[in-house]
Length: 338
Image 1 (spheres, rainbow, N blue to C red):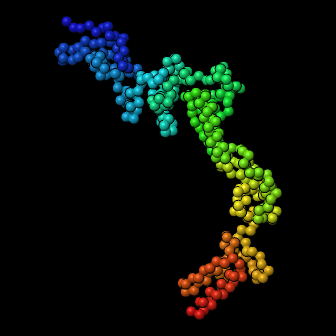
Image 2 (image 1 turned 90 degrees about the vertical axis):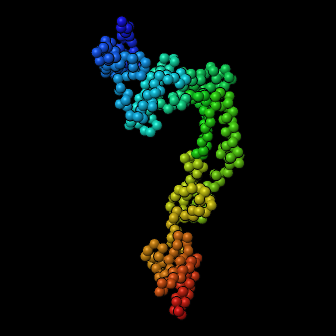
Image 3 (image 1 turned 135 degrees about the vertical axis):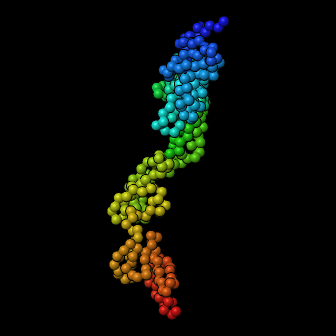
């Protein structure tokens, strides 16, 4: 007497739903077959025992996935926090780290699509229902005055809410400090500690701050400071000063370079030969050229004397043009004696 399997029709095993069961062929000792419809829409004939013991779960469409995708399919149906992964999506055109996404269903009934790794690694455990925004009443019960609670704002400067609690973020002169806290009281304490740390480093305005306005009108070398701008936050504490050069040109450069003498002019004296009443007149024809053979200028307002004979070179740097002429004559005399 053969066993009746008609009660299995309509049942689902894995991704296969049985819609018909055939009788076995006793002549060829064949086993009973089940006609199934896969979730992908394909119909197939599967051995009934393989279907019942779970060794066959689909028509085989999962085998067509790349090997790298097979490992993600194993997470379908698993639960992480309040999220249950129902489907894994792939986007080959996305940037690295965002190609695999998870379609999840939360315990509250909401469905979300998010990065697969944020769910797998436990960074995201719900659709956001368990991290509701801090309401005005909740903050007032803690004795804190608030003005706005929209868009993760707590109404307290430098403190916002996030998916895991509270975030404290303070930036001064391009230096950013960001810390996290579970409660609002801890966030307020963190804010105070960060501000105190900034004060010790001199990154906050204090009574010890130098009076920069007193520098306006002062002359450093060839530059007279006309205006001092605010620091550029992208460049730490860097301040720029608008200066007027002796030649009449207006230039903008770093304030520290002007005060410490690193920048002395708008650039009009760079590479020029210092004028001297006793110096012979000559015509400048090239950059760093003095018009006198074997004598050139340097970017450091000095003179270079270089004389070469028969592969032997003599070189010396001096400060004045008169010294350069003397050194040149000395080199020529030494080569002439040899």
